[in-house]
Amino acid sequence: MRKILFEIPLPFFHKSIPIYSYGFMLMVAFLVAITIARWRAKKEGIDPNKITDLGIYLVLTGILGARLFFIIQFFEDYKNNLLSVFKIYEGGLVYYGGLFAGIVTLFVYVRKHHLSFLKLVDILMPSAALGLGFGRIGCFLNGCCFGKVASHIPWAVRFPRTLDKTGMIDGSPAFLHQCELGLVHLSDAYTLPIHPTQLYSFLSDVALFFILSAFFKYRKRDGEVLLLFGIIYPVIRFCMESLRGDNPLFFNLLTVSQIISIGMFIVSVTLFIILRLKTTRKEGEKITA
Image (cartoon, rainbow, N blue to C red):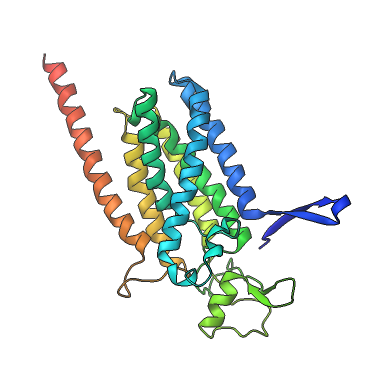
């Protein structure tokens, strides 16, 4: 865990500007994702500059949507300190909120520029998966999105107790969570061993990127890459949620993200099958004719 990656000194002011790991990795995620999306768009005959413009809009609205979804989910933690809502550099984004906001932004953009919505979204989805993966590295460095206690696995990680400038204990998130549960005490230096769910997510998202990239050239209709993402990612997210220790359960059963994952999976599988059946039927009619 390393919340502040490095600091830029300001000699004449005797101060320094902290560069937070979470924000830095979000920037890396954007640059990597947009570079690959521009390359794929050029191959598909779309102006790469439009992808860059769209990428900027998607980042801004995506962060807003992801943050809003997080605040709604954990409103009790923010209602007495509303200024904390703006501390995005400390973490606290929910991917589904960003995804939904991004889809709305994408729809408005393609309407304005007379582009194919489904073709463009197929181009973007592999990049979105890879960008999400790099974002999870930011989560690991920040200490958020942590896992449940897992003393039985050799690769479990322990997050430290951290102090603010006044010497008061202010984290890590996993440490504070385990303190609330009585699993550790304020005198302890580290948490109990927990699942490195952020790294699990990183590896899963990178694998998803390669799967979507490989499938891209075999798609029979625009929109199939999006639907494949909608089939695989919910499975990944559902599994990750079952290992995470930071999200509350509804009715002691499922988290919000798991509920959304189930719905997204069912809709995506259904639409994918329908599209494939229609495509197969049309191909059969052409052969018969």
